[in-house]
Length: 200
Image (cartoon, rainbow, N blue to C red; front, top):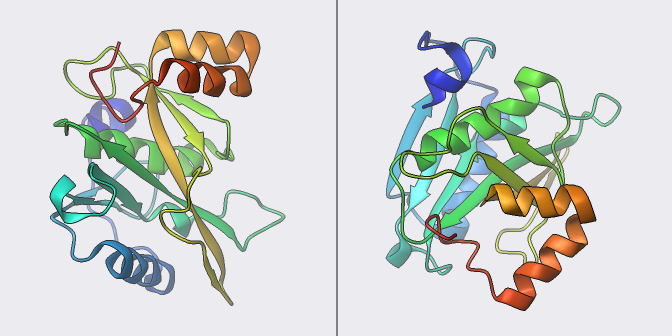
């Protein structure tokens, strides 16, 4: 999935990103959620470092969902005038989906590949479905409504953890036409299970 989206199947072996940032981020994850159930590494032709996705099974984290977190997105400072501002992405699904890690890795590399900031309220749409069996092609990025993992603050800068929500085309159309607040209100009114990858 990542190869198809990003490099047309041409993956290459590259060196690890700055150990200072990634080591601190991984320790932060482990302090909050313990040892990951799985980890996967993805390399992208346009980026000179790999991305990893750490995951925790629903019964191994307090959120009660299959939890995915990026490792490597914070190597890139999205704001040139604020080099200390960095971000990683977190996603929760229930039930889990094969291919979810690849989709999140594609999102993690997007800011660096496109030289674009990705922050609260932004959407990132891919040309292909996020994983097999879904029509969803878009992530909505939000600050967490509840702080499930706190910001890392250090002399190298701070790393915030943004939530990535897979959304339907109808969600995207509503947001485009009426704004983010209208979409979130709709979700609240309809009690939309935004963690469900099979939702209509």
